[in-house]
Image (tube, rainbow, N blue to C red):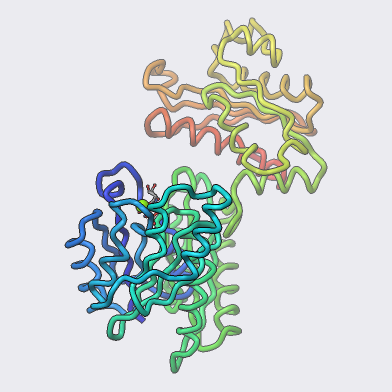
Length: 417
Ligand code: ATP
Ligand code: MG
């Protein structure tokens, strides 16, 4: 099955909005074992949308279109699809009734919203569970168009609820169909080239498994897609490849699929009934921010002392003035005292600290920009680690926050640093 995507919108072409719909759909299609042949991006221009629809339909069996279903004058997709199909635009009674219902509740107010009841004649109209513009399904020759609203929340719900199941059903009906099993392994602190090199021998032994690498610094992800003539074989093949990859990558793998580093750290802390307090310099509290992305983080996360000034390092987490004067704030000794102070003053199981030079200024020959020290205080004592990160200020802060959390994860797994 040949699949193409078509994303529309001036705001995407002008760079004001990043196209997140296409990557979302590509990810979903990957797990169905479908490789998309082409994605096209066009502005809100009738001729361009129509050209793109006609040429995609000539090549593909399925074209998923996103955007331009709204009520405003720049929403042209419905009329373009109708023209390309050679049909009229007609009012759909069901959509109209739903819109009137929403208007009566004050969800949508203006009369031009009623434009959204217009659909290409003969198209299937699929209810949008989270918005007013429906999804439209129409065919031109051998090609099926799935036309979806551009608003990411609506797009995603319709992809998951409608597009993926329909494509899956089509794949199931194909003669000699293949079965797929997919896994996303997530690593932290491992550059893409290292990840690639570590699994290279495995890729050679499993030619029928697709390996996909994605760098999302400081994370790096490895996607595995196993294909086989039956689901049982695909699952077995995936399980073998996954366990070999996990063995090759060791504790660099922090989680899989929907896991985040913070959710994994939170899960480990919760399972043990442990708590953590942070002391952060140079990350601006990003470690705390990451932890708090997880609902219920307050069960194990006590707080973070975002302490930049030396005076606050002394006052809040008990760093000694003498240590600061002797070795400076960016040092292993201060990292250790921050971690111990954070733990001791709050009664947490773990105290974790970070202090470093995020740049662009403030570096020296001895401690260049990117030098970061970490401290971790726990039941077995305190330890420190010195790391050096490349990149700009943002990158260094991000790497530092992830490494801070990853240190807690590794300690919880009983690893020595
Ligand atoms: P609306 O009813 O809001 O007009 P629509 O179906 O007409 O919905 P668009 O007008 O194309 O969709 O886009 C609505 C908003 O959704 C855009 O302003 C943009 O913020 C977001 N959006 C559209 N397409 C994408 C995309 N491909 N990726 C991410 N965001 C998008
Ligand atoms: Mg719109």
